[in-house]
Image 1: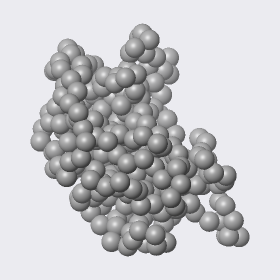
Image 2: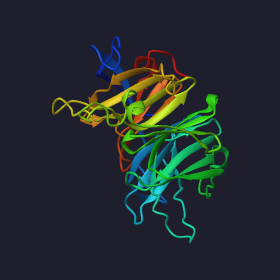
Image 3: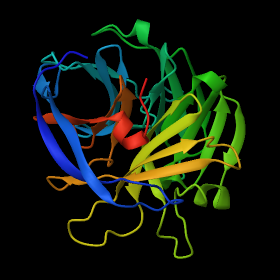
Length: 310
């Protein structure tokens, strides 16, 4: 990945041995802050609510909801650390009459190696979505982008993880109260609810329904699934972080393994608030909305997941 402007940071992160779902001692963590270009669309300053992040070759792809126009629009954006601009495509679905569909909330996404899988939903829980699959090779700046295929779904899907090796797509709904599993043709093969979700430390867990992690973005790599999001457990103090990076092995199996890492705050920012991806041995977080000033954070994958990354 070509480098542009960054600075080194040393933060505190909860690491050490994992005991079930519990975190142990803290240690120091090195992290790079990488500057991205200001968001300008069609030559004008713009703002957008960040949702998903993916790296394809040397480019960062971001899904975001444009909030400075009405009706709001679902966007796919692209830039690089050596670039000064963003390419963008309006991926808002159109209803059968040709009008706005109300599906303006793109979510966490992942590439299958050739295509980006992107959920686009209404901006409210228990609503509806369309899963759209776009070929990366067809993404030409300033040219319309057409989905290779798509399928509707009757829930708000906030993040997708594509397990290409297994031919599966995992979808987390609003607050990760339900996890859906489809095959690569869009056929639903499994639904995880209730206890199946709670024992994985996701959604609304525990007797007081306050624990669990609401997934913001997640990525499948081989037999492992990596999720980032905010714990629903109330922070223990005014400067406590709720951000977690969670590693799963055999997520769908009864004997799955789960390793959570509590991420630190940086300048009061929850690192796992929005987008995350994994590439070339690093985890990238894009926790803030896009606007006049943009940055992401780069952390060694081996520190968070206890192994080397792809």
